[in-house]
Each structure stands twice: as C-alpha cells, then as structure tokens.
Image (tube, rainbow, N blue to C red; front, side, top):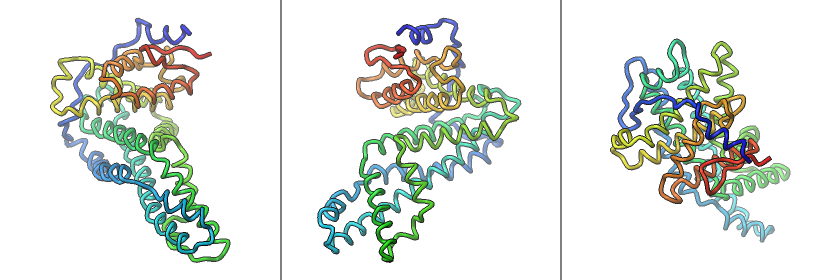
Length: 325
C-alpha cells in the first residue's frame, strides 16, 4: 500500500524544465517549416474527423430489424444500405490514424535529434511542440468519443458478417471494393482497442525508438517527460496560466499532459510510475484534481487504467496511488 506513496512523495524528484510553451500562438521558424508544413496537412483534417465521429449515430435500428426478420429481403437491403456508408466513415477514421502516425514520427525525429536536448528542442521549436501537443489532444478526444459509441463496433461487425455471407452465396456486394478483406482485418483490430488512436501513437513511438538504434531511448522518453513537466508547470504557475488568452487552453494542457504520460509509460522500460521516472506523477495528479469536479474524470480514469496495467491503483479520494499487490 505504501510503495507507490513513497514513489510519489520522494523529495529528490526532478522538478523539470520551467519555461512557457506558447500553445496558442507559436509560429514555425525557418528551420521548422518543412516538418511543420508536412504535419499541418494532416492536422487540418483533424477537426473534421472529430465532427464526423461526434455525429456518428450508427445503424442499430436497421440492423436489429434485419436480424429479427432474416427472410425479409427489403429489411436486409435497408440494413446493408445503411451500414455501407458508415463503414466508409470508419475507413476514413482508420486511414487518418495512419496519417497521424506518420506525422508523429516526423515530429519525434525533429524533437529528439542531436545535438540539442529535449528541453532545448521544445523551447526552440515551439511550433513543432505545439503540433505534437495538438496530435495528443486530438487523440484523447477521438478515443473519448469512440469509447462512448458502441455503434461503431456493432456496425462493423454486422458489415463483416453480412459480407462473409454474401461471398458464400456469391452475391455481389456493393461496398466490398471499398473495404477489402485485408483492410477489414486491420480496421477490426483498430476498433477492437478501447483507445485505438492512443494505441496507434504508442506503437508508432515504440517503433520509432526501435528503428532509430543510434538514438538513445532517453532522447525520446526525455522529450515526453519534458512535455509533461512543461504542461504541469504552466498549469500550476499563476504567472504562466495568466498568459493563456483562450479558456480552452487549460483543458488542452491537461489532455496533452495525460497523453504524454501514457506515451511515456508505454515507451519507457519501467514506466511512468517508477521511482526512476522523470515525470512528477504526484504533481500531475494534483493538477488534475485541482480542476473543477467532473471536468477531468475521463483523464483521471485514463491514468487509473494505466496504473492498473502496472499493478497499481489510483485512489479515488486522494492524490497518491496505492500498490494493489
């Protein structure tokens, strides 16, 4: 019970970098522009993806009718007609995750390269740091929406079952060319994840580390821990927080902080909750709990789940974690 409390109250934990990262107004310098422009092409579509996901209603009624009346061809056709365009949307979301993965890897390459330290990179290349933050912010918002919409998996499961039956019966299927079997398998794995976008980014970060063996893993983990520290310090320092001109910047910082903690935990050999972690978890949890009630419950739950995977329990009523073993 006391092990994690010791981790989170240790006094020798580094306080981390202390500078203001301008998430609202950062503009690319000449040296940032190439990567910035590449990533911007992806990010400009992010809001549209979230809007499409938020308005995704599913074909639950049509599917239930078709299942309850399996011999009624009209209802079968109606359900199929409703599901096919929805699967087109799901394909678009999945393909965007692949574009986002490529964008993230480009940013990691820029923000972890020698000779600068991660802190120097984030302070010097604030426009790229802002884009990195925007990717994380989008990712957590996407996954929050996906987790509360069971229609996504229901629609896709019905699509695959119906398509399989049509193939067995040699029935031509409209929409089959849209999502072939190989793509359907990959999409199925993607949507089976509780947090598919975050899983995509975690895998991309891990792959980035393994493919760049000449780059010390600390360059990547320190980049993530530095970003978490910068967000925490900006949120808990009135001087910095007063510089936010948009009321949404606080929730943006909170989401980014949690997003980099999760990435760090997946990439770092011993995770974010270990004594050797460079992330002040006690400080980050305190910042979350200092927000208005219910405004950050989803973010706290994300950390609770992350800790649970490590055999640690986040107490619901305190700012520390307790060893569950």
